[in-house]
Image 1 (cartoon, rainbow, N blue to C red):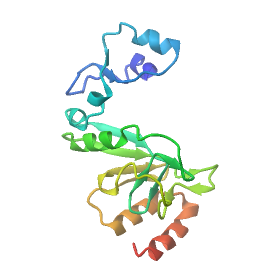
Image 2: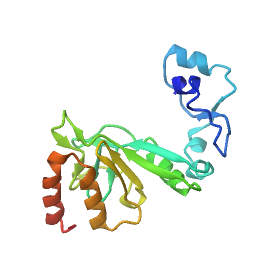
Image 3: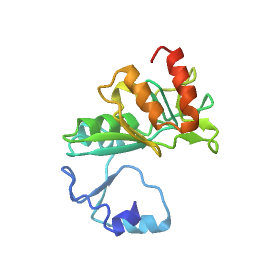
Image 4: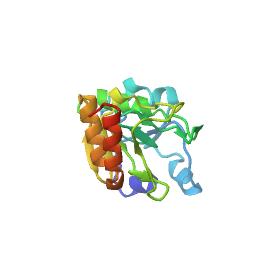
Length: 188
C-alpha cells in the first residue's frame, strides 16, 4: 500500500469518512513501511472494532470491498478459511467489509479469485463445500464474483442463475463437470 500511496494512486480524496487519511488497525511490513508510517499525518490507526465495523465502513459513499476466497460453491457460499478440512486462516473480517460496502451509498463488494488451484488441477468453483468447511460469506451476501474468466453479479439471483453465472467464470476445463454436478443437485 505504501507504494500506491507514494505514487498517488491511493489518496483518500474520495472518502466520505476520514477524507485524505489511510485508516488501519494493524500494520505489517518492512522497515521502509514503518518509516513511512511514523509521524505521517495521513496515517490513522484505530481499534479493529472501529475499522471493521460495517456501520463505519458503510459511511464511505461508493465503497468497494475487494476480498479473496479459497473456493465458492454453486450457490455462492464463499470459503476463505479452510483447505482440505483444516483451518487455513481466519475470517479477516471479510463479512463486515462485504456487508459494509454493499450498505454504502453506491457501494459494492467483489470476491476476486483465480479459477483454479494446485497448478490448474483443482477448480475453485465447486459443486458443494466439503463437510465441515466454514462459510465465511453466506450466499445471500455475495455481490460480484470475479476470476480471470469474467465477473458476475450474484445479488438478487435465483439459485439456478447463481450456478449458471458461477460456471461461466470457472476454468473452462471444469465447466462441463460443474454443469453435471449442478444438474445432479437439481440446481439446473
